[in-house]
Amino acid sequence: MQKMWKRQFFILWLGQAASILTSSISQYALIWYLTVRTGSAAVLSVAAIAALLPQGLLSPFTGAVADRFDRRKIMALADGSIAVVTLGLVALSVAWSQLPVTAVMVALTLRSVGSAFHTPCLQAVTPLIVPPDRLNQCAGWSQGVQTVSLLASPALAALLYAAVPLSAILVLDVLGAAIAITALVLARLPELRSGSTAVRFSLLSDTRAGVALLKSRRWLWQLCLICALFSLAVMPISALFPLLCIGYFGGTTLTASAVETLFSVGMLLASVLLGLWGRIRNRILIMAGALFFLSACLLCAGQLKPDAFRLFLPLSFGMGFSTPLFSSLMTALLQQKIEGDFLGRVLGMSSAIMTLASPIGLAASGLFAERVGIIHWLSLAGCGTLLCGVLCLALPAVRRCDHPPLDEKSSASGKTRQNAV
Image (cartoon, rainbow, N blue to C red; front, side, top):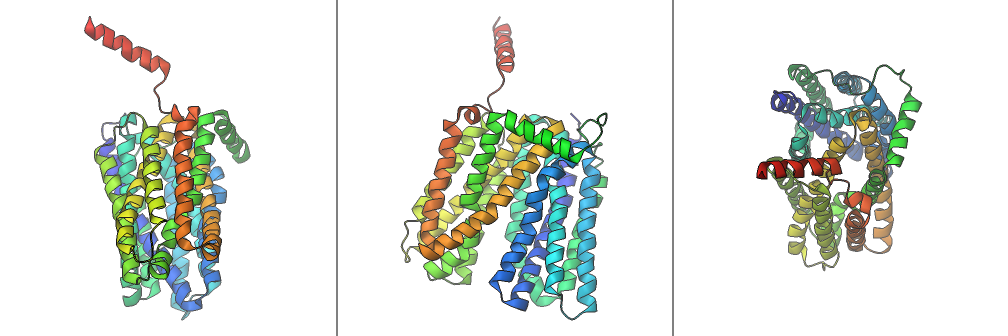
């Protein structure tokens, strides 16, 4: 393991932090532009699909690319391609008084395609430069960077959208991509390629090999199905916060912002704790505990009356706190347990499962909320999350997947006996 891994990880994620923040600001600005321009919920739904669907559909295949080619170059090309797409929007916004809605939709789609290549590469890079016993901590810091962006980007986007033209906001995204590419160069990372170059690359064959690996490891496909159920139940919740706060609790946009802020602060605190204290022997136990805690928060929130908004505030903090303890440790578990030759594909497939489950959950929660009541979705989501926690402990393959192999246990016990002698 390289001696300079901390420096490399810090520089890499410093660049990624700039890119994630500016991309998030641009994404919010484009959504607000569509809101102001059209005022159509249907248009916003199509925009959300354009931003999610390509990444979900392509991730299993782009993971195969990440396993066979230098991940540094793929990330740089993905960032550069997204920047070129954004520059195209800047040119259109300068040339015309208003951006065509179609152009925004195409840009969101192409940005999602770029993310499909970038995300599995970034996740698969970490175990190539970070010692195995530090993966949990690095997953916590990585989640912390994304959470800070989640906290800061809506407010920054609102300020910028009111003060400067849309084209100026989009230029920030281009600068963020340039910073990320520069950080890749300055980090002096080794050639981040784990797959063999002796066998000729075939996208379909390599993808099928990844699917075969997923099927061959019971704990892996069972855990992916748990993640799909988790996404169906939990991902719609943040989208429902404004409706809950304003429509059910009778609050204002300020109270909705307070709930979303507390949720994000909870995520940030959990991420920091993972970053500082991440040497966990059995991640599955912590993940299951996080699911049970999240379930309790959701079930309690689902029983609140319209005049009990103050009780909803600490519950939203608890929801945010528990989320990284499941998702970040899930990523670290895959990074450590899956061979480097297949890691990109496995991460890509798990990302695809969660990404494709999210819009299904959003659609289901919307229909459920209109017919039964929005507050009752929280109770249903709590039951789904509770089931996820039970499955983590009830399925033997999942429960034991983070146990050390028998030969490691035998070696450890042998060393103990030698030390005793």
